[in-house]
Image (tube, rainbow, N blue to C red; front, side, top):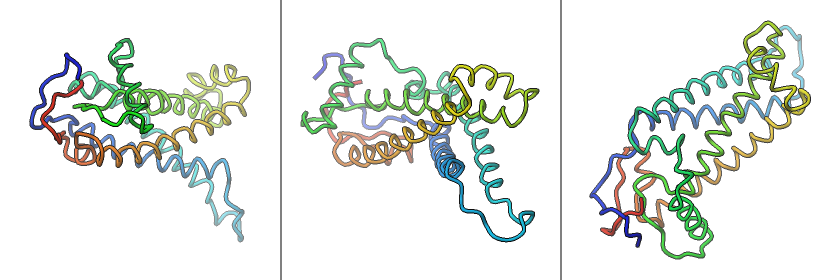
Length: 233
């Protein structure tokens, strides 16, 4: 056991209400963006009848764009809360990447998830591997989707739009051409899908096999523990 470990309190209030509300809303928005984004890349078959009576893909695009703006607001809020919330709220935005202890924890979690190490470590906040992947995929991945999304939106909004000025004007040349931006935007969607699937699996697995609560914690905010041994964070 690490000599720097702290004694385990009976319960710790880890996830504040704003973080838990953001978590739920962000998950719903990402789900809507994934479904509508997939349909935009793979449009539905043409519907029969007078064209003026149908606007199916138009509505799908509208929902996608609106959800994108909501995603931006949510990410800005989450960044702000990382600085005004508690210590555990900062892990999503400001992980301790320069800490040797952090990377040691990442390696241990890889061994634990690979069924090589038989004993899980005990954390009050997120474990180091979860922090790393949430920071890389969820934080930077979301930021990447916002930037490339606005770059594509700016093409339709026109050269005099703020989306074109702040995004399209430099993002599209950076990627070489518009189609490359579309391709990378779509590819990142699949990375996020893989992250979501893994996130759900790990959450259920850790709730059963780890030494602290998980699913109940994201619902109530309180972390409880299954033994009286010290924590590793």
